[in-house]
Structures are given as C-alpha cells and as structure tokens.
Length: 414
Image 1 (cartoon, rainbow, N blue to C red):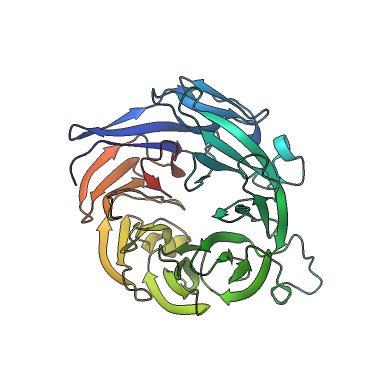
Image 2: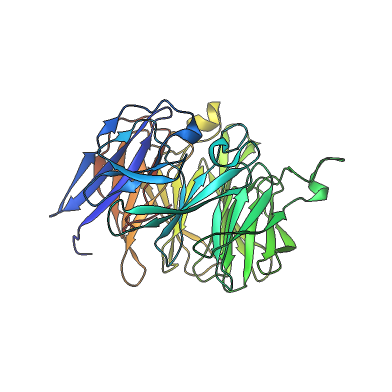
C-alpha cells in the first residue's frame, strides 16, 4: 500500500463524560487532534445532544432529540450521546439507535413510556451536512438494524427488552411500520410466561442474499431464528449455544457466531467461534479460544480473513487470566474451515468492547487496521501483514468504550 492519507474519528467514552478526537495521517506521519470540549448539557440521557460526526472543517455535527434539528458547533458537549449507528449500504443515510433509558429501554423524548426509537439521518454535501429524514418509534432496549433489498426495501430492527423485531418499509421518507415479529419460543419460557415481553433477547442479525432469508440471533434462547422477509414469518430455528452475535461471510453461505463460556472453568473464560452453514441449517465447525473474550469481529471485504479483537469479561481469576491485548486473525478463505494465522499483541481493553476499523484496496484486501486500546488511551495501526506500524496517543486511558464515527465513510468499522 502506498502511504496514502487517511483519517479516523472516534468518541472516547469515559462513562459520565466523553470527548471526540480525530487521527490524521498525511505525508507519512500521524497526529491526533482533540476536538474542543464544551460543558456538559446536564440533561437526562435521551435529552442530550447526539453526536453525529465532524464536518470537513472539524465542526461538531449535533442532533437535538427534542425536535430532530441539526446544528454545527465548535465544541462537543462533554456528555453528548454517541449513539450506535448503522450505515445503510448504497445510500448517504445512517441509522442512529436511540436505545432509551438503560433500565426501562424507553425513549421518553420521542416515544413516551413504552418504546424507544431509531433516527434516520441523511448526510449532505453542504452545511449543516445532515438532515433527519425521520425518527421512528420501535420496541424497547438495545437495537441492531439489518437492511433487506426488495420492493419495498425493508429495515429490520431488533428490540432487546421486548423480544421482537420491528419491520420498517425503507422508502427513504416516511418509513411506515410494516409489521412486528414476535420471537417468542414457548419451550424456552417458564410455564405461563407472557409472549411479550419475552426472554429472546435478540442481538445479532444478518441478511443473506444467497438464501434470501434473514437470520436473527436470540441470545436468551441460544437459537437463530430463520425468517422469510417477505412473509415476516419464522420458518425454522438453528440451535447456537455460547454465542452473543453473528457475522455473515461476504459469500452469504456461512455465518460466524461468537461468544464466551464462563461456566465451564472457574479460572478461565473459553471464547468460542462457531461456523453455521445457512444452507444446511446447522453448526458445522467450532473453535474454542482459552482465555479469550472475543469482543468485535469483521471479515475482510474479500472474505479471505476474519479479524477478532479481544476485551474483558468475567471476574476474579477468570478476568485476571484473560488476554485483553490481542488481535486474532483467521484464514476464512475455505469455510467451514477456520484456521488461526496470527495472534498480534496490541494495547489493552479492560472493558467489554473493542471495535475495529480498516482500509481495503480495490480487491477487498485489508491494507490498514485500526484498533483502539481503551485502557491505554491509544490507537494501534497495523499493515496488511498484521504488523504494528505505530501506536497513536488518543488521550486519557481508562475508557469505558471507544466508538468509531461512520460519518465520512472513509474507514470501514464496527
């Protein structure tokens, strides 16, 4: 790879407060710019300004949740809400997840006391660089969004605390609710348990163009619900124990489930990667990873490599034995076989989540990897051979989480 220019924008989440930084690489050197920080708004979580991204001039793009207006500011409020976001493929739109109050899972600003919301934001070429297309009320709690092409195109949004999927018509304007899928499984609930809310706890959802089906992981049931996106019906279920998320291979036939077993060994967490053949409808391979908590993972666009970051979970001896400073690289070119090819030491993530970002060439091979180290307050930059090129200082360590900004689209991230 030529030493081309790149930039990475991230939100450093320290819990009650956070700050925005931008790492710029040009002329063969990298530097970190701290975006000015404003005083905290002092508002409740769902009333705080939502951080959308940075303008070309480095201004902070903020969303006011009370009226969905967008403004530019020279500084970011210290308690801004860095909502999780899902870029919609092939469009300038990004879906921001308003997951609501942490206990009730509701968004009282937009949806009252029984729902939370998602906000569809369109990126613009000129000031204020964004406009809200619509905020739509869905179910309660943490959301994952998956887009399904068709006539009409659909967006499926999972609702963790309700145990449902909200299905919106993805029309680029009104986003009417097409239906709600109840993920309830009677044999997994206690006798007499209500169908809604249930204990499905959906988290992890993909759509395969190869099979034409949507696959939703129900953490509470340890199953994948196989869904016909046209009829909005669950056709079957695939057992998948020890999994907290699923990831689709670019070819569309296999998904990888990732999770961690904390019960087998009191002294060691056992991470797991499971390969599911969607055509066969079953798990066809499993790989255990002692003392590894697999945090986030991503395939290279060409499908040849699987990257897995580590972070922390468990307590006492289990947590003390964890490798919280690694990137794992696997050969995924011949699934269902998944072969380890590298274990790279980077910085520490003594927290629950470490995302990753990358730059790829025109053939889909990864040329640069970007790995935040929340505990150290740094960013590791690796080349396509998984060698650490540099470690960039971002700010104070001890972050609860680092979140990549999707706004300019230059870096693919999760």
